[in-house]
Image (cartoon, rainbow, N blue to C red):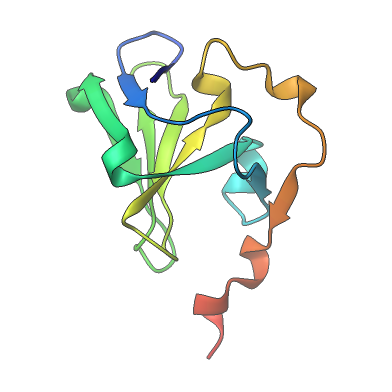
Length: 120
């Protein structure tokens, strides 16, 4: 178990994920490219909000399927539910105290600019 927190520590989430992480990614969609976060995905049964649920705010745009969560106090993006699979969680690896995201190499890029759900 790992503990994920926002900057002010009002939001605390338990994540069951092992290292090395199965998949590291960034996304180039209009929102994620501005966040610059390196993420990994976890199943919902490996994700539990311990405290601060009332502090979490949700940002949604475009199709309003994906949910991007951030702390309403410090503004840090902690996690999201992707629209390609809203049952899983993408987590901001920089919110894990014992993880140095500046040491990651070969982080893949999810092509959110050309998302398959946008094709008609």
